[in-house]
Length: 308
Image (tube, rainbow, N blue to C red; front, side):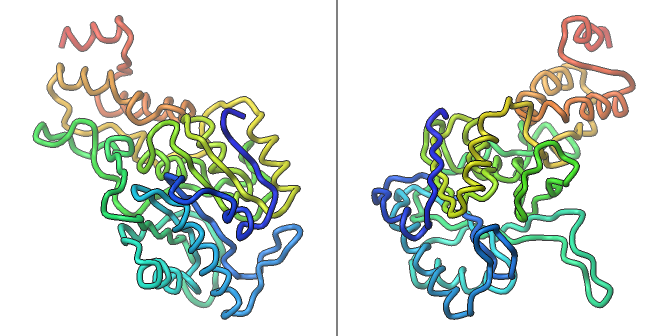
């Protein structure tokens, strides 16, 4: 599967089999200990038991990361402060970002405010870590020549829709993460052919992303049914990732200069919409809305720009 390995087993055991200082990126979505049913196990442990479990797998994660490596950890509100403390004080890792994944739909409440986000901790093993901002920039809202035409830093609040049950890529898993969300982590923190490990592979999102952007990956999954589901997912024809940051589809305002506008529009789809073919129509419509008519990058359309 193009250097993608799916391993059935316990993360605590299988992480111990990976060489020290050999992994470039870890994307971890461990059980939140909230009582979810994961098929062959339930996400229910005592607080102390859960913290012991967390310390064990995080120590292994720290051991296998290269000095230039990064870890992203999804976690719910009950334990995220505990994980921060383990990564920071106990393991001596370097805090980089506390990312908020904002989504528009979720559990509803009638007493209190409905949750609309998950938290993601980003730590690095040292201060000498990989980070490729140009890989993950987002289009500017207003174009200014003094700014980077390539776009802006996406910040630490990321908006991606859940993978809804009507989505053709939806898997039979209770906590499937959007591909666009994981894509940003992998693009930001790895080179091509780097090794990515997902200790709790679940529905296989991290592996699917790595498969499509030329990274090696190891996914560890304790439930053999989920592991087999992931293998099937990896064998399906790729038609584009199942989610995108809505900002990727926008066209900067104030692209008044025809030459600047032509240069920008020639590059936008390559910079921001690669592997997101299903978003191209929205972008084309945004161009038409902003600048009066459909402007693409074909020779015929570019002549329109030159005549302005």
